[in-house]
Length: 151
Image 1 (cartoon, one colour):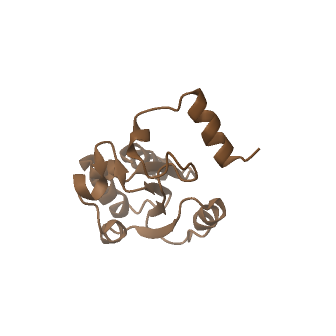
Image 2 (cartoon, rainbow, N blue to C red):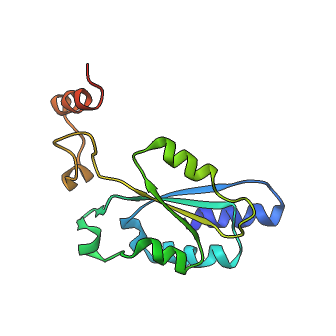
Image 3 (tube, rainbow, N blue to C red):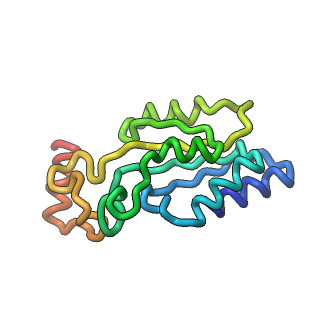
């Protein structure tokens, strides 16, 4: 997010018509640099900046609310001055529509909080943080593919 905010600011300074996107994990929102950029963007009216937050409630070492509570996540982004939209992160049409519905006359940056489930659709991966660290072996890959794309 800090890099995207800097690029959005640079586009404003140079008059370029660019929109910047940053994809964040919810666990990444524990980082100070994220909140520094979250404060910076509204002050500089970076309406050309959108962040999409994958809110699956897991991070490297456990549940986000057990490691360092993020709740209420949407309200925090709103309090920092962002146009904040919550959506189903598994519904591609809804995600697309949410991005297309951003008001071009709104001077605020946009935070799109995409509610997701880690490993959704694969029975042995769904909501299991072990898959944060490892890749499936050949057998697991076949089993996951069969669940996601039935043969």
